[in-house]
Length: 320
Image (cartoon, rainbow, N blue to C red; front, side, top):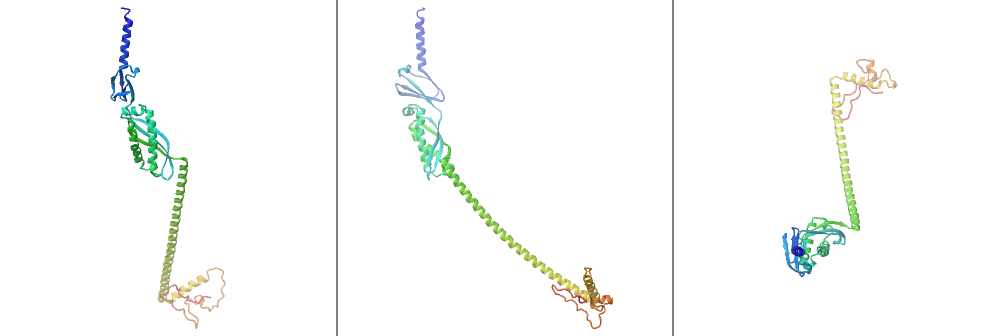
């Protein structure tokens, strides 16, 4: 019995090895290609436990596990030329998945790295084509979304030949190259300076118009004010003369006395003026006679005129 134990152990080990070699597991993120002597015999896309012929070391049955999820690769610092000869530096990425495992195995031997290399070349060419037919501002405008769709559509036929499905293409960055950035900055600076000069010129023109209008209004206002003042002054003088004439007609003696007193006040206001007058002078008649009787041969002053403008009533007595 003891001599059989090693044999039993070897048999059990062989059975376990055969079972282990015949089982493979596919999870939800993977798919499996079953190869028999290098030929694809089956593709497992659903997760679970599967069996195959043992002895994969003898090329009987082999299993190649490939991805069953969305993959991504990035393409950085691609220098593309647009219409007009200017250049952009573009960063983009592609999201793809393996949708045909048999074709993927036949085209790139099931290697994701090799598939990405081929997609990289085709993506570079598609970006250059799409940017090359557009102007400088297109990639920075709303047209960018349509550009990404166009790149994706151009890339899909090549991806299909590799057993891949392109889910999306995105342009992450579109920057000007250093020399184009400086040229663009200089152009924008010149445009802003020109715009500023235009605005200043318009401002100066508007200021001149406003100043001319203000000067004209000042002249008109001053002229109207002077006209109104002259009219008011004339009306005032006319009213004064009317009042003087009316007062003279009511009481000539009192009017002559009042005018003479005003004349005395003006002439004798204590300003140091020396006056040499004859005692018989008409100017001093109210000093000589309270009634203001005129000397023989003298005549009384005429009454003020009514309705005159700007005139003044004559004094009752001649000034020295």
